[in-house]
Length: 340
Image (cartoon, rainbow, N blue to C red):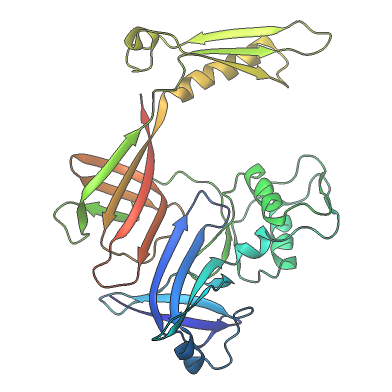
């Protein structure tokens, strides 16, 4: 594996950083999902890119695989550059985030009002554009706002955008390896994008951990709707499914959760809601942490297939990281839902 660190100006390469090390991180559950750290010799850095601007220029690691194919692994802005002055050389460590950092650090400077019936995709495009995010990829959608929506002066831009994305059935904002801000519809991925299998060239390392947290999940669900001038509605559902490890019979005791609810108008609606809570509780999250050889091109919530140590199945990758150095491993954390 080879790599280089491009310096970009308006997304055009103008030189390369002489990096001594580089670590790339991705967390699909974070607001700013893509980050990196790069250590450079300060004297060499200004020799290779004499007019390098730490404020306006961007940094982009490029990984070159064994077939010579280049993979751009993000376009980053510098958010800090602590410096270390030593006897032999002076170093700086560039701490980097993708350009969603701009939205995360920004607040609306004027009232943003969207009338009922406004296309969500038009709102997404407008918020990104006014924040200076020119590289955009937005899935087509006919979804419109059902009521008037308003964001006041001072409200955080990224939080507001993510609120609207979730309302419309989209994933939260994420940027890909080429720096495009992506607004994508939620989908259930069923085809593996990466395969990690014992005994193949995917290089699965021996150590792996698996965790399934089921011990705090309830098996009795009580819904209560209390509104002024109306009769209190209550409903209780109990898990007696003998195929479920959580059932009262198999567990040997009751674990009750009470839900205080608003906006449910009838007993039938309450019963349907509580029964769904009980059904959903029988699906727990199984998390797996594993190490592999470095495979560039991972992105937002990739579907990965794992066949290792008796574990087989499709998982959704929640985070990954690796350092650009010989012999380094790629660390993954992935999850799937399992029946309990």
